Image 1 (cartoon, rainbow, N blue to C red):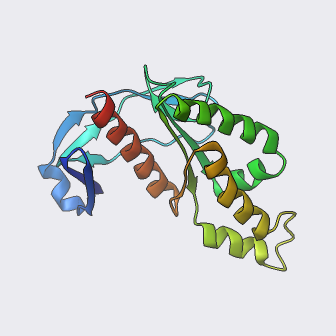
Image 2: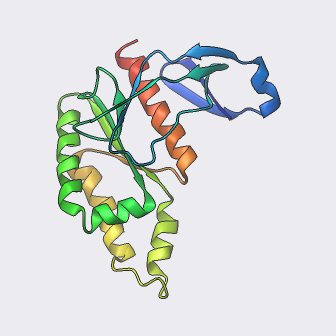
Length: 187
């Protein structure tokens, strides 16, 4: 379990809590409702989120989002997270390129209007590239193509990409981004 210590809204620190200490945590309802896109085939659950020694009960609404996969209800045009598995990222760079570009253009518009948008990848960039460079992998995309897109698109569209390593870390990072944005812009 991860605890975010938000001594100040500007600083968030994570620590690992052993399961035996979970019983000492207070239950608290998250101050916002998460919006999860209905087209998400494997949505994050946002279970086991702990902030300031309080385990949060995170409410979610499934709805069709115009942009991204996750947001905060009522703020869908101000804060957006696009989730990608490693395989989905490769598909979005190749066969889904036009759709992914349009998604980035919409996210860039959110950023231009003082909002925040990002892409969180449930994978590690070096591992993705290593698998693409494997001569026995039979991939139709090279690591050079992936690196070129990763180096170019965040700058071009003003939308950062975060490679979180795995699905759970991506989910925790996504929640922290939403929580921090809420704390700084709405709370």
